[in-house]
Image (cartoon, rainbow, N blue to C red; front, side, top):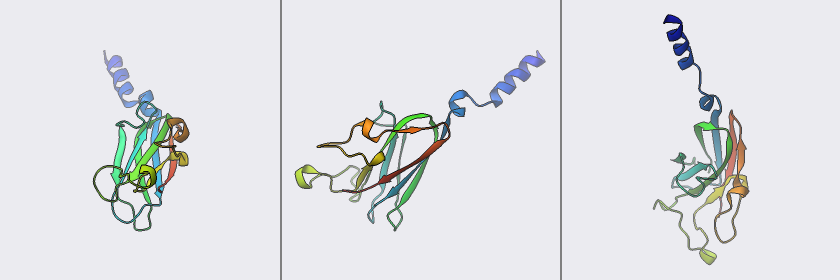
Length: 140
């Protein structure tokens, strides 16, 4: 019985394959305006433009930069979508030329959509088992 308990205890001490295959993804932002938090989401294709398990808000520095880290991210393809809620109403505000956003926004890989958000494929990046770094430039 004792060898079975030792084997069970040893198995609990080992990381699971999901844990062993996950890392930290650091997202670095530039181009933020003074005031208002940045709302950011790291999503799989299935989560893109929907609620994601990796989402947060952060306050940019006075130099227009900000950094967020998501831990426990399994290896795979992900896209970052974000906007700065300058007027603090909880949503991306539209109203510019042809209904364009009037608050800074950005996606990974600098993806831009035509008359709407970009496709996942345009923003997607591969994240390895150790995580990675993604840079997003916010703009109008």
